[in-house]
Image (cartoon, rainbow, N blue to C red; front, side, top):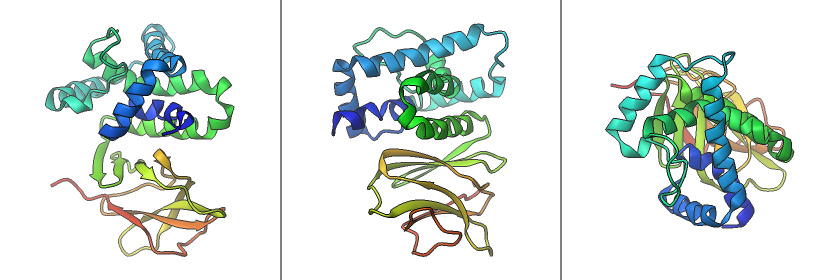
Length: 234
C-alpha cells in the first residue's frame, strides 16, 4: 500500500474500521511515520482539552455506560490509539471515550494543513457524531458496517472499495418499503470510506449503492451492487 494511502488510514485506525491485514500494515507504517504518530497524539490532546473546557458539553452518562459495556463484552470494541510499543496514556475506557468524543476536534485541528481533505474530514465528523450516540447500533455486512441511530441518522463505513470509472461516481440511496429510492449522497472509493447518509434510514428501509454518472442522479440508472437492510433487532 502506498505511503499517501497509509496516511489517510489514521482516522479509520482510530475508529477500528480497518481489517486485520490493513491494521497490521498501518501499525508497521506508524512505527516509522512521525506525522501519523503526531496525528494520533493530537487526538489524545484534543480529548484532554475537552475534559477541561468549561464551555464544552460533557459526554452523556449513557455514552460512558455504553462504552464500558461494549469494552467489557468484546476487546475489539476498545479502539487502540497507540501500538503496543508506545506507553499507554490512558485507561481503556478513556481511550474509547477519546474516539467517541474527540475525533471531531482532532479532525478540525488538522484541517489547516489538510485543506485538500476538508470535505472528507467533515464527513468523518458527521460519521463520528452518529457513532457517539448512545442509541446507535451497527449492522455489519461483508463490505463494511451500517451505523443507524434511533432517529434514523445513518452512515456507511465501507472497506476496499475500488475507485469508480472515469466520469462516474458512487451514489447511496435509501429505499423505504413500497417507495422509490431517494438519493442519499455521493462518494468515491478507497481502502476505507466513511459516508454520512443524507436521508434518514427508518426501520425496514434498505440502503443501496450504485455507480452513476458524475454529479449523481435523482433515481438509480444501474442495479445496486450493495444492499443493506436496517432490520429491527430481534
